[in-house]
Length: 317
Length: 232
Image (cartoon, rainbow over all chains, first blue to last red; front, top):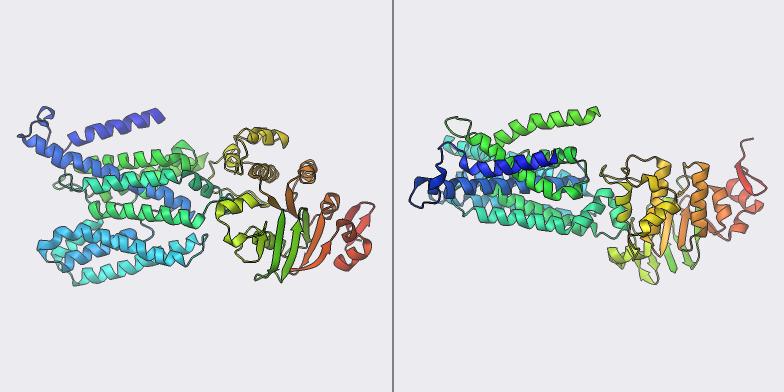
């Protein structure tokens, strides 16, 4: 089972850049003058890499958040980070002149990052074990942002409303390697930080009381983990939009299949989170519709039923 | 080992002061007297400024140092991640220079080898008490506080834990409301009532009839060396 999954994942990763609306002549991708060269190196490959890195960030972020917040429904979006990014992007779409619209990823990163900072200011007044309070603050922030987003929808014209809506569905339409580097750095950086705090995370997974007694600086570790998850999610959202469901489903699926404690699932969740998004993108690009199906729609359509199936199957035993 | 508690007052405890100098202690008291709260305050699970150990203020210690001096063994094993097994849990308890091989020794000493690959959430409450004690031995803190270590246990397990508490030469505070356990341990006794200390002294004196009558009315009867609830 394990080997089969790994093999399937590697095949998906390997074939993904070669399959798309326009068939690719494999022999021509190394010829700089051919159309295929551009298609492969500037469109397909960056897209697959960004999909992988984003999926990995969201899934690993979900794993960490579920451990820290002791709540199976927590995802990197629960704290309002994606809502912050969406609001800032909507703001850019409505108020920025069209010539500056290229800056909107920067705005969405700013929105995500401002939310992170806001959460940290609140978190400083909470004690180590009050993670629930922080979670509630995140939920309240999300509602606040949604209300502000409604105002923006109300004052925007039709074209702008559509752009905002399209952003909230997520998109992997990226060109060139400019966007690849930040997401890659964010993904690998997050992985490094989580692996560095593996032992502390393991103790937190037993119980907060036990971690405290065994000498973990709980508040410090939690804040570091939250900060890096939020930061990398912010980078990902600013480039591909808020893609839902990956952060919720992948950690649970991997856990149900492998039956190991979360600290041992850091690498698998990172890897399969990336593969999942690549696979969903592969489906979205090849459904044969006029325009491609938004990635957020595919993740939910594919992930939702599978998730429910796994939970029901898990409950039977 | 020197533990000093200096005018500790919380929402529940009232002006608790005592010093422990190279000795063990039993804290007695009825339900809701504040025993567990006191223990949590000592290990700083409940934040306060009143505790010093080895002349260092506990509130000023970093987490690692605090773990070297103090450990608290709760009355229940609660593990969030259902896939952590007993052996893994015990690995996480290896502190203060305890070698890895010691896990096997402690498992054998408490006769719980057979549990080591079981999930911590799949073992019985009695077994989990023994696992917690194993964890405390591996943690090897200067002072360990046990919260109701023998509650809800079969008699053979009670005896096993009693022997451990009696014979292990590390310093400990045992919280219980089992008078027989306190009597047999023979440690210094502190008796709490409504968040205040109403008795602090030697074990033999605590169990004199006059003192028992003062603290319990006539609800406890001594029959030879055993203490019974006086149902009448």
